[in-house]
Length: 255
Image (cartoon, rainbow, N blue to C red; front, side, top):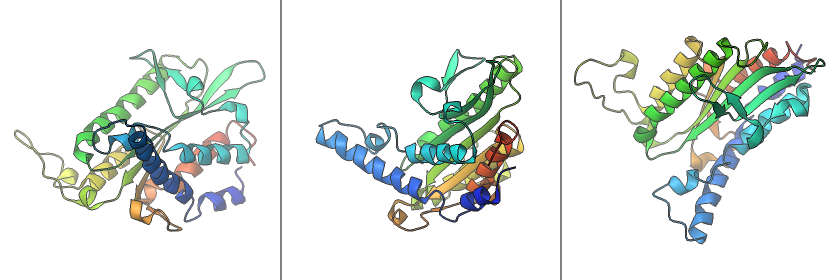
C-alpha cells in the first residue's frame, strides 16, 4: 500500500508550483536565447520551439516514483528510451514510461505518460490539433496493446497532463462554426478553457486515458506560492498522481 506520507505530499496545495514557475522561466529564457543568437521565430513560437519547459514536471513525477519504491532503471525519461511501438505507425515517443524488468528477464509496460502545454495567443490554431493528437496517440497505443505489441504486459496505466495558460483570451467565449449541424451543448460559445475542460473530462469518462490532469496558470502569478489552479477535482493533480501510485502498487513493493 502507498503510505499516508506520500498521499499527504501529493495533496499539498502547491505541489506543482515549482514546476509551473520553471515552465514560465524556461520559456522566457528560450525566447531570449534565440533573440541573442539572432534566430527569428514567428510570434511566441520562439518560446515553444526550444522544448524542455515541462522538464520540472517530469522530474517531480520521476522523484515521486523513486520515493515510493520504483527502481530508477525502470523509469524512462531520456529521449532514446521513450519510444514504444504503435499499431498505425512504427513507433511513438512518449514523455515518461515505466518498464518493469522482471527477474526472468521479461519486461512489462507498466505506465505511460504524455505531458503537454499551451500558451496563447494562438489557442484557436492549436486546440483541434492538440485534441486530434491526444486521441490518436491513445488509440494507437491501446490498439498496439490489444495486438500484443507489449508481449505479456498487463494493461498499462495511461496518463495525460495539460497545462494551459489562463488569460483573458483563453477565457473569452468563442463563436462556433455550424454551417450544417449544431455542436454539442457543452461546446456552445464555450471558451478555450472550457473546451479543453470538456475534452479532458471525456478522455477520462470514455476511458481513453486512465487519468487526466488539467492545470491552468497565469504568467503574472508565477512567483506566488500557489501559482496554478485546477478547474475540476476529477482532473486534479492529486487524483492523477494517486491513481498512478495505486496502479504501480500492483507491480512494486510501494513505500
